[in-house]
Image (cartoon, rainbow, N blue to C red):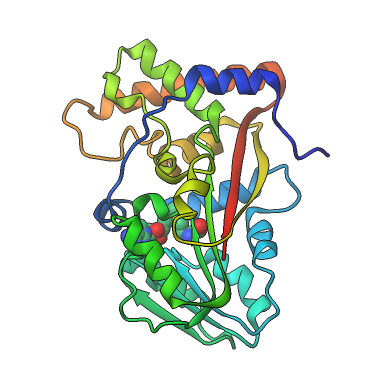
Length: 302
Ligand SMILES: C[S@@+](CC[C@H](N)C(=O)[O-])C[C@H]1O[C@@H](n2cnc3c(N)ncnc32)[C@H](O)[C@@H]1O
């Protein structure tokens, strides 16, 4: 089984359909809209894991990158509902975990998920660009997985990570390439085009703010060494419904329904979904499955 899903056709498609401009989100939007419950995270985590074709999961990759010996003190910025921490915890049997998140609902879910485990856990509600409650040289590992695009002040965030990390520590920042999941954007943009939708909806993933493509330069200003570990996966759906759930709930219709917008009513989104579903069904009928190719990875900073 290959885990290199790139083809010349996919590369050409990426160039043709992924816009340079990306959506921009605030920490408040994350706290008050996306993560005021765990639904969005639950859908994404289940679908990414259930429909993947890379035998090594996203979490396996992240844990391997950290090179844990078992006794490290780890800080997870934007820890969400603790899904990653639950898998990582046995690798820190003699260490400690501190999870920080701006959204109380998901932080509470993380606390519940980890309750009763032997690794000491501390939960902090706050923004990743203000770590003033944490001392200098406190952590051996710091992670920021799929969350940095929400952080208001990146300069302060990376300066703070540097301060709280012990010498010899590792900061892992996981994000996507802007063209990750391009097949989802392809059917989405095709549907928007057919509907004559407003121009400003044609934007790339918000992760474009600090992506696998531009992150080395940004992080190089704060850390002496910046390595990159990239991996790919391909989600394959033989039934359109789980994909539609992923598209609608997990990705807010590729961000088209992420902010309140008077121009876009319920009928707009019903038609959008119907048009997207019809394309997905046609691909499944032709190829046997609908593929969503992921280009993702981590920066490892020291
Ligand atoms: C896509 S989720 C990723 C969760 C987890 N790291 C994972 O990969 O499963 C993004 C998380 O970042 C959190 N978040 C957003 N803005 C934040 C900020 N400024 N500081 C800390 N956490 C933030 C959200 O509440 C959410 O839990």
